[in-house]
Image 1 (cartoon, rainbow, N blue to C red):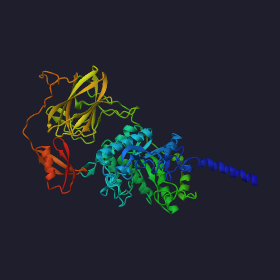
Image 2 (cartoon, helix red, strand yellow):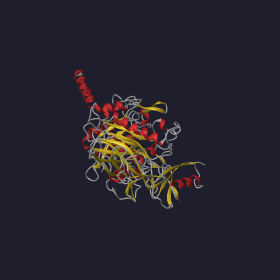
Image 3 (cartoon, helix red, strand yellow):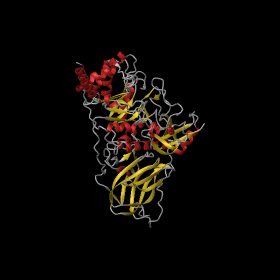
Image 4 (tube, helix red, strand yellow):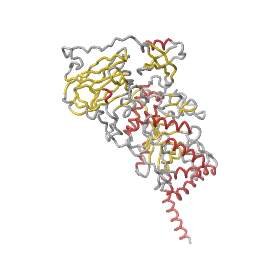
Amino acid sequence: MRKLSLSLAAVAIASFVSVANAALADGGAKFVGNITTGGQIRSDFAQYWNQITPENGCKWGSIHSLSNGNSGTSKFAWDNFDKCESAYKWAKEKPGERHFKFHALVWGSQYPNFLCKKKNPGITVELTKQYITEWFDAVAAKFPDLEYIDVVNEAIWAGNNYHSGYGKPAAGAEGHSTDDTECGGSYIIEALGGDRVVNGKHQYDFITTAFKMARERWPKAVLIYNDYNTLSWQINEGIELIQTIVKNGAPVDAYGQQAHDCKGMSKSDFESKMTRIHNETGLPLLVSEYDIGEADDTKQKNDYANQIPFMWETPWVAGITIWGYINGSTWVANTGLIEKDGRKRASMNWLEEYFANNLSKGKNDVTFTPIEPEPQVPFKGKPLDIPGKIEVEDFDVPGKGVNDDGTSNASYGDDSENHGDSDYRKDDAPAVDLYKKATGVVSGYNAEGDWLEWTVNVKKAGDYTVFASVATENSTSSFSLSVDGKTVVEKVELSGTSFDDFTKVKANVTLPEGKHILRMDVTGAWFDIDFFNFAEGKDAKDPDDIDKPGPNDAIHSNVRMATPELADYDVFDMNGVRLGRMSAYSMSEAVSMLKSTKAIKIQGIYMLRGVKNGAVKTVRVTR
């Protein structure tokens, strides 16, 4: 009897080991994952979970620092105190069976302290943009094949705050926040394109920009917007955010429901809210941070039993991540599933039983199809000839996706709002600001960081003189030119007094023969540009000035004398809120009026925008 008993025990142990080494959802339709515990991947992790999200290890503030305090060279610590790279490698041990989610690229509650306005008084919008780009590029270099990415985290506007402190320490939708009040907020929103308010509705431009940046670097990844309170207090605001960024062109693939707000939620309430969110956004949902903070084992188990089956068996729910499983080592008290002494709580026992008996019920009709690259093509069907005139508005038709070498198939870079008054190219390039002027259609509202590309055919290699027809009211406007990514003109400086008076600037360039991509990058805002004209030879004569006797004559300013006209200018604060409208005979006069008006009570930075021509000027008002 003793021998038989031992044999049976051995069989039982062998059976237990076999089951224990298989995660709950192994072989199922979707993943059921969890997070690191105190920065570590526990030895029992793979016994339960087949997807991993580092709780803090991949957040921007955990990884990115500078070599010399708040100045110096960027450096990145991928396994600093939590296991970002280790978690990635854990998933890569069994590709296709295990999954890794990067959490998160942009979050207003945890970013490097050198972005903090109080901690680093020298931080600017321009520097913030530089650091954001370095951060995205560093992640892409380290993890080029990410499967799931929380691109932006907690940016819903509610209660006069974003859910996390992008611009200032957030009070939070529930009246509290763990954001660092000593940080004082950041310029992340401004650096990513701002957040316009149109008819009282936030446009979340900065989110759209972040998603576009992510798609350029990870064309095959599932890009996720992630937020909390989306099943309770801010369900409407969350739906509206997703609808807005999708309308504005954000390549968002899934909506992450943190689901920290499901304690005590009934089965019917949970299912109806999830269904409404899916139906109104049109996106698959990921349950990204699920937990139930309940000390009573039975009550916690009942919530799991009411909610997990719907997540597992609903085809448009793409995956489930539980936010911690060791009690006492989770973000919120009493959300764990296993006690520190190894005893399983009722919810854990229920999970094991449910998946053992219902694994086959899992449904997943979500297919995330990566964008197949499509190259940009010449707008007029064939490359534009050099020497010859290139009308700026005839930039290439944009392609799709990113090539294997990392190059983008976009043909322009601009924000999502069109400030122009021309319908030219409204179908294939609706974001580019094209204006109707006396000379034809021009590109205007050129902000720093904007760019355009043309496919050109250089008939003969050698030296050329390029003439550009431009108009500006600034002395700091400029652009650069490159061919196939190689700079041929580092900076063409512009100056002027009116957006209606076009003058010529010129530069010498050396071009290779054949088909190439010509690119203009805006290095100093704001100016309008009509065309480029390439003439063969160094310091060649402007082809439009045929009466000039020699190639070395100066370009004359094509100034049109006109009677000054009264124009309207809108006044905005730095949050994009329109404060009013004023009339002046020029931008310079409008600047003087704004600085002296008694209507502005608070000193700070304001923005003037010409209603007719879209010209923009930032103005510092002191009181």
